Each structure stands twice: as C-alpha cells, then as structure tokens.
Length: 155
Image (tube, rainbow, N blue to C red; front, side, top):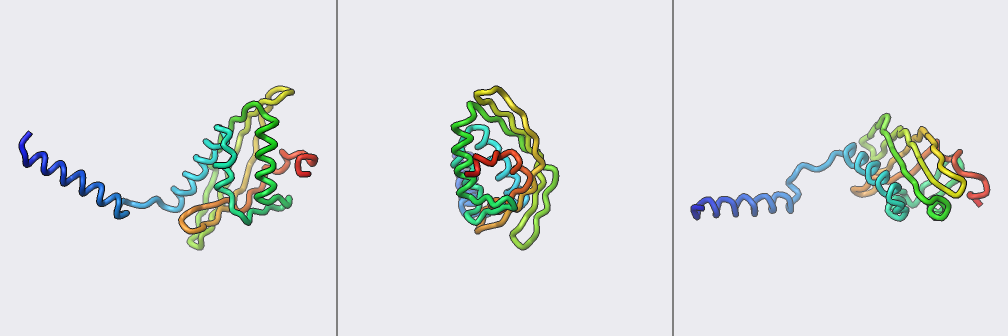
C-alpha cells in the first residue's frame, strides 16, 4: 500500500475519532432518547435487572395510587422473589415531547410471568410521564399498571 494511502487512512481515522470525541456527531433527539429508555427498560425487565430498570425512575416519582420510587423498588424485589421468569413486551402507541422537558407516552405492555401457580399473561395500557433531568429522561409518573398489584403487596 502506498505511503500516501496509509497516511490518508490514518488522517481519516484520527479525524473520525476527533469528530466523535468533540461531540460533533449528530446528537440523538429527545424523542430518540425516550425511545432508547423504553427499549432499555424493556430489556432490563426481561433480564430481571430491576436495578437498571429503576435507574429510569425519577426520585420524585409519584402516581395516583400513591406509589413512590421506594414502593417500586419494593415491588421489584417482590417480583424477583415471586416469579421464576418474566417476559415483557412494550409497544409504543404514541409519544408527545414538549420543549419544556416533559413528554407523555402511551405504551401497550404485555407481561408474561411464571410463578408457583403457573404462567400468566397480562396486558396494560400505560400512560407514562417523562421528565428531562440534565440529559436524561426519567419516568416521573406512570398510570395504568397499578391494578396488577395486590393490596397486600403494597404493605
């Protein structure tokens, strides 16, 4: 290979690294960031990685049923103990992103889980309020899943 070709290749590689390092590559839109959160949250749930899933929940999470992030943490631990396996499929039905750091998503969620009594499948239409904190989008509220929780689990 001619020396000029090697030099040109090196310049292109270094230039590409510099562009990426300096953040000159196109950034993800807020919509794309939220879609990535939904996809990674689905993957975390399917892997039983409740800690990773909870990283997407805002510290000040609250919903109409009175659940907080601490309640969700407790429910995740209970799910980990109660179910031998969990499979989740999240299907985005709609997403509205405002320029004020808020977004609302309508997500149809199907959950398959195995436990001592057998296998169950549940479907939920969940409305999720996302808030932007720094560069991250976090769940501040989610409505539509709460009927899945038995009163004794809320304890």
